[in-house]
Length: 291
Image (cartoon, rainbow, N blue to C red):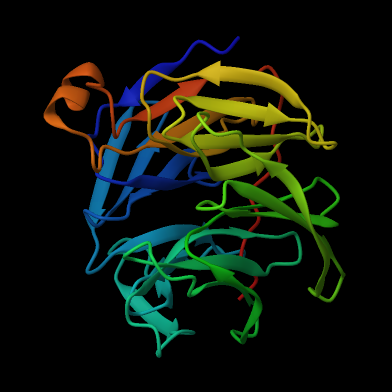
């Protein structure tokens, strides 16, 4: 359990957004800064990449089987055409913040996408959390973030976890059936020296797996916020995690090389790679967009 293997020594500038596709038996992930969309197929090790027209934060599958939905810097929400992966714009929720971009997102069991934005310069608290409904209307549901990260849902869908990376804090919200958030509260604050909370996901037991930017690790937290397990990684900038494989019993991990010095890159030759490990538990199926 927990043996870490590098599947793709991609050298991604800012690898992020891992998503397991059961219908393709493959893992999608992005390099936000390249910008590029990648797909890795474990069965035969096939690696496919598509160059994107601008920074891309995430992709989510559509429930109707017709391609993906993505979050772009300038285009905002967009569909990606199957095969060509060309964007078809849905809409930009932040036309007044040209220096913002999407950073991370998840879909819930109701077919809604929950996506956060951030200040590209990582200075101003202009980032917000949005909900994109299947009818293609979007709503701002929280605001005041410099860098948003890692939406994740409890197994029953009643709790949304969302991260303020700069503050080192993971929040929890209660989610109503209609998609309203209430009772925002601090779930966990990452101690200084352990890096910053980045992408995350819940397993089938309701525990939260968190990637630590600058922390060389992944941590599994219990629903009460207690540290259950720490998995050390061979790279410092661990960005996100997703369960995958046919039994959802593998954990895929993305990482970044951005900002590392030549010396640090020599010490971390796998920085920006895609990794896999045995988590010892199973995950939850990724949500799909209902629109």
